[in-house]
Length: 231
Image 1 (cartoon, helix red, strand yellow):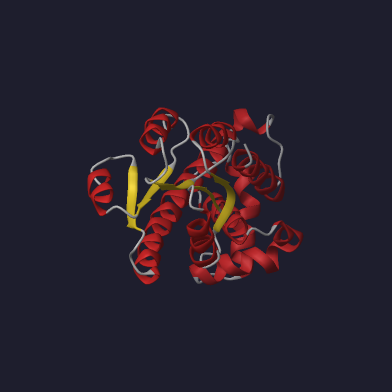
Image 2: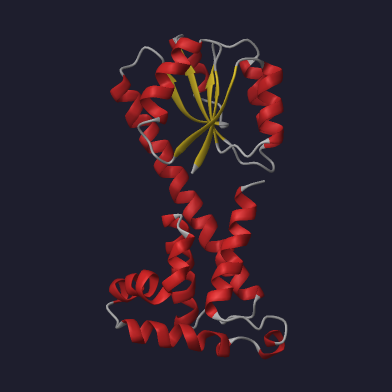
């Protein structure tokens, strides 16, 4: 989910944006609506926010952008700037902190297309980040990342994560391995056999540290991803 903050003092416009954009894209989750500089910075500093819809018509909006620039050393927030002043939109478009600009008087159809691009880019970046994190964790557990059984474990974790359904762990063979087998045009038994063999391909010096079955490895990494996403 893309956790979203709206910073806007025109609550009627916020409501329209909420109804048309937030409700249209299922992977956008509205976390807060802020109306002042102080409120905005407090939320950004203390909450897990991925995307900010920032009205340039708000007093201190540029000050908020400068503060986010400082916080972005760690947080990597995306900002979509909105304004009913076309000159403000043209001016802010040159700021590398802004990933998209929206003229408030544009049709919702145009606004929607712009948001689709933002969300697509964020989803792509997130998928790369998640894959790299899982690979790193598997390496830390001693898995041989080049072994195809380890790759199947990685794909299983991604599949469960993207479906946001831990219940899939209850029957990996039917719920997950079946998908992996279809993806690679291999039998479920072939996928299962390679996954079961994966722990035996780990570095010997790490076997004593991580005596995990594939299922426990999958659960452990999913829990770490969950903890990361809830900070």
